[in-house]
Length: 93
Image 1: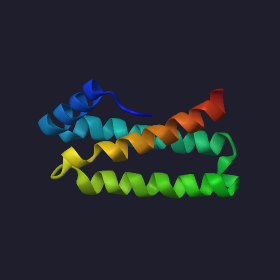
Image 2: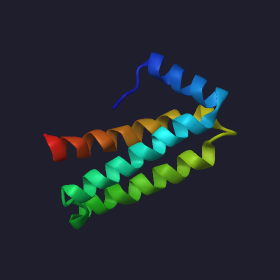
Image 3: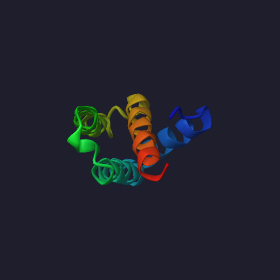
Image 4: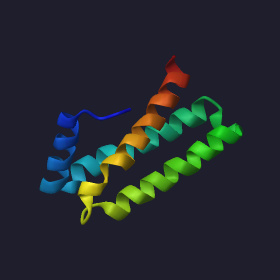
């Protein structure tokens, strides 16, 4: 999922003001994505295991950037949203 410029600015403004609320949302997105991976049986596949590893890596990358380097976080957020979209489609689509 590619974020619009407006959404990117909203995320950055939120992180600048107080990184905790958006970080809670980000953490929840990661947890929901993992749940979708589990519910679809994707973790039993090599692709699912690779995506799980990538999700874990992205989550750690996010929390290494926030709060000091929050302006660098958008590519990480977009990658997590792509995984979320992929596994939501598998679960509900």
